[in-house]
Length: 87
Image 1 (cartoon, rainbow, N blue to C red):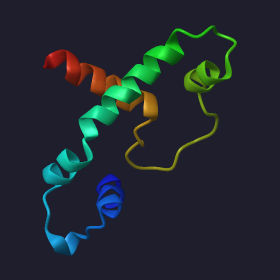
Image 2 (image 1 turned 90 degrees about the vertical axis):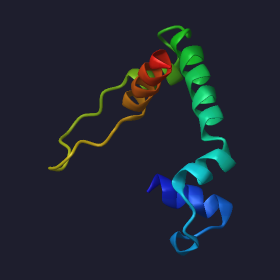
Image 3 (image 1 turned 180 degrees about the horizontal axis):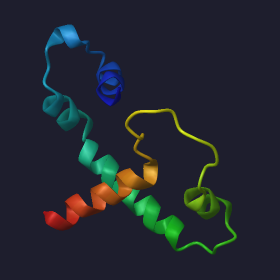
């Protein structure tokens, strides 16, 4: 789904047969991830009573549908931090 959105931003379709790596390079996806990590650090420095921090730490109630669990935003941040530490 992510690549569908990224292709749409550039005005490309799958029929154009442009590799995903080329699309990511054109849109500078790595810079976006850096900005997201900076925002995460900013939110983590906030006091506990601030709404953005409470929303980030909130655990949703209820059950998820069967199948592979969806990646949460915070889970993706953790993966990005681990990748960055390995480089």
